[in-house]
Amino acid sequence: MRSDIDLGLTGGQPALLDLTELLATRLLVQGNSGSGKSHLLRRLLEQSAGLVQQAVIDPEGDFASLADRYGHVVVEADGDDVALQRIAARVRTHRVSVVLSLENLDAEGQMRAAAAFLGGLFDADRDHWYPMLVAVDEAQLFAPAAAGEVSDEARRLSLGAMTNLMCRGRKRGLAGVIATQRLAKLAKNVAAEASNFLMGRTFLDIDMARAADLLGLERRQAETFRDLPRGHFVALGPALSRRPLTIAVGPTLTVSRSSSPVLVPLPDPTEDARALILTASPADSQAPPMPRPKPRPVAAPDVLVQLASYRPPAPPEEPEEEPMDPEAREAALAEVLISVLADADAAACTPATLYQDFTVRCRIRRLRGDTMGLPEFKRRLAVARAEAGGAVADNSTWERAQAIAAGLPDDLAGLFLVVARAAIEGAPCPTDAMLADAYGTSSGGRARRMLAYLEERGAIVTRKDLRGAPIIAVPDLGIETGPGEPQMLPTGPKRRAG
Image (tube, rainbow, N blue to C red; front, side, top):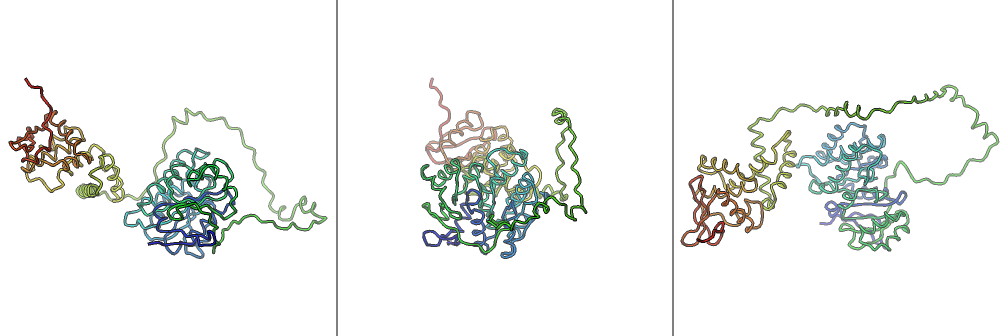
């Protein structure tokens, strides 16, 4: 289903943008100052205001006028990052469109506030992952390609939040729409995640070359970006057009508080102009300006003393939460692990990949504190994969099998437990597919090689019955599996005759 919005005209025909496709593919707008990119953002936001929730990161306070006509809530950032995170969470919960105005903060404060707000949108509960357009004007301020005058911590926080928005936001319903004056000043990993592009007037060679690369144009065609009129953009992407085309952005219904400079006639010259400038007015005499004190020279601080006396700032105080009951917490961790394994692609993923997914799901469930480390996760993962068919009837022998698995390498423990379970229950020898799933691979041959390695360690012994069907014995448990499919398993390490 298409949800087209009108951006303007192209060749006399309406220039349409597929909003549904945009939500899945993201958008990058580039143009030098005065090219009309803020006007383009305003047109896009106005046309889609009634179709999708919106959040605007506004460093200059230009988009506050959206509130009067479309009901956006203007949030004035005041430096309280924790409060901004909570506001962002409520924004997603109640599906309210907002404009985050950062005009009252300095550069570092703007980066920290944007990082906190975007982090709150990104960390919202899964139940509130509704589609949302997140427009970031002057994106090079929040995702700079190189270090600037701000602290490394502020740059790291802001760049991380922008990277999450563009790289991982799609699954959470967040569609990034970022606008920048200089592509060369925007972090490449942020720009590279956009699939739709609107390139406006550009003069610097380095920016034109990068814009041409993103659009798939030849370098000699990059010169055309210099000739684009104000408000005209070259469009490309699945939500716009499969071939580069030039569009003229249409008018908007709201206006920015700051407008482009226009020529205003000078006042008529007067004879008393000198007196107007050099003679003090009554208002000046009532409030004489205070002289600015001269700064005193201060000795440079000793860096070694600063480092020795540094103490990290205390984390912001948060309301204490009642500790979760240990049994309830353990049950919640087990549910999260089961949900990880329920994914259709989990069988082919490595334990490290599954562990990352596990930690994210724990955050979504609000399981605070240390959930479990990677080694413990690998052990539980092996047990969970082996118990996928239900509880094992002989619990005492199964506990001994888990103790043996604890002494094996992490990647072999799951393979051993699958074999041990089949032996405990007298089930047929596991198939290649079962062994591959237990090892976390899609290759049955690789799983069989690891089975041979288990036999070299003395954990199992493989043999064949008179029909050639494989059987696996577990000597330490005194049990073995039933016959499996013939020619499924290797015969074990080759031994020299004689």
